Structures are given as C-alpha cells and as structure tokens.
Amino acid sequence: NLLIKMDPEMDSQLRIGFIGAGNMAFGIAKGIVSSGNTLPANIKVSAPSNRNFDRFQDIGITTTHSNVELVCGSDIVFVAVKPHLVRDVLNETTVHFTDKHIVVSVAAGVTLETLEELLPEGASVIRLIPNLPCIVQEGALLFTRGSCAKPTDGVLLRSLLQHCGLVEEGPESWLDIHTGLSGSGVAFVYLFAEALAEGAVKMGMPSSLAHTIASQTVLGAGRLLRDSGKHPAQLRSEVCTPGGTTIYGLHTLEQGGVRASTISAVESATERARQLG
Ligand code: NAD
Image (cartoon, rainbow, N blue to C red; front, top):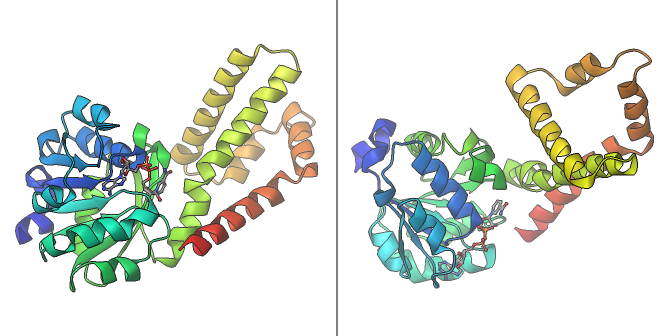
C-alpha cells in the first residue's frame, strides 16, 4: 500500500470512495474516470438513498448505502457531504480508518483541526476546495495537507485530479479565499454573463441568442486568458481601439463601480466562508 501511495503511475490499483453522492462527488469522480488511470469499478459512492445514484452507475461507478463498507473497501476516501454532516459520518466510520487511508474532505469550512480530531491519531487528512466546473473537467481546486499527510499523498491527489481542472496546493488560510474567488466566483461570472445578455436584449437581440453568445463570450475570454498566460489588463488593452466601442463600454462599467464591487464580493464571500468555519 505504501508503494501505491508513492507512485502516481499506480493509480489504476487504487480504490477510491466517496461518502456523499452529490454534485461535487460526481464532478470529481467523473474527472478521475476520464483520466483513464482508474477503473470505474474501483470507485464507489455511498449515500443514504438511491437518489443521484443513476449518474454514477451510468459511468460504471458502484454504489452502496453503507459508509462503513465504503471506508473498509477504499484506499482514498473523499468526504463529500454537506459540512454539518461531516461530524456524523466521521463519527460513524472513524474506527474503520487505518493508517493506510488517505482522507480528502471537500466540506467547506470544516478545518483540518476538526477533521484530525474526528479521525484516528496519525490519519493522513487533506482538505480540498473544488468548484462546480469540475463537472466539465474545468474546475479550480486548491488543497492543503494535514499534519500527517505526506508530500507523496499530495502528489497522488494531484495525479488523481489532473482531469478535474487546475489543481494547486497552498496553506489552509488560503482555502476560504479560494472559496470566495473560485467557489463563489463561478456565480459572479454567471451574473456577469446574464447581465451581458440582458444588455443585448435591451438593444433588440432575441434572448436565447443573446444568452448563447454571452456564454460563448465568457468561455472564449476565459480560455484566451488562461491559454495566453497574459495579464487580463493586457488582453483588455489589446481589445481597446482608441476611441472605439470597447473603451466606451469599459468607461461605463468603471462608472458603475464593477471593479470595486467585484473586489468587495470576493472579500465578503471569503469572510462568510471564515464565519462558517
Ligand atoms: P449535495 O447536497 O449535492 O450532496 C451531498 C450528498 O451527501 C447527497 O448525495 C446526500 O445524499 C449525501 N448524504 C447526506 N447524508 C449522508 C450520510 N449520512 N452519509 C453519506 N452521504 C450522505 O452537496 P454538494 O454540492 O455536492 O456539496 C458537498 C460538499 O462539497 C459540501 O460539504 C460543500 O461544502 C462542498 N463544496 C461544494 C462546492 C460546490 O460548488 N457545490 C464547492 C466547494 C465545496
């Protein structure tokens, strides 16, 4: 088992479990399956009801109602229930964890200290904050290793999640900021996309076409930003013909305070994540 932990090439032999069958579990599981390194048959999901099991079964993942069975049959256990249920599911399963397990919690606000308290001493615990676009393999994921999780456990996690999107490691104090920036940030971008489309509707374009073009605009702008590696200000200035349409529109956005309100949105979402923790 030590060898398995040390060598990401051996992903295919790992048994991976998800406690909770929700959106986040599905997004991550789908990313892991699409990497091709892990057989779907080696992935299992547990939840109290059959609701949501279909989509896991459709991609070959096995399902169970028993969290204990899931823990006993997994090398890596993702804890993917709502934050207020983490204590209950770990209390229920704690005696079944061994020092061979790696436990990865995605629950917002549940600290490493709390997770380590709930699990046997010496457990390898990792906190991971994903975001919803994991479902389309374009997530932004940040993780922090607990005091007993080895650097090789982090290497293994990165290898497993490579098809979920961007995966970065950082200190635990950054996780709440990441929640504001990226977990909630997804919704901020949706609000902007909606407003873009509404602007076009106001000017006379049919709504469905306006929304289709707005979503493609957000996608295209995002891909260009990521793939070019350029600073957004540079890309913005490249679009701004002197005296042209874009600088007129940008001026209007700045007058509306979009920059200040976006900074404040990330700040307040981060502060809320800290309160919940
Ligand atoms: P969800 O409500 O879609 O899924 C929760 C799942 O847990 C459900 O399948 C439910 O049946 C199952 N469940 C409930 N009680 C259980 C029990 N006792 N044992 C096993 N399973 C049980 O929630 P989600 O959006 O997937 O969020 C899961 C976790 O991911 C949360 O802790 C959340 O903080 C975290 N998270 C979510 C996002 C996001 O964008 N959705 C981002 C970052 C972190």
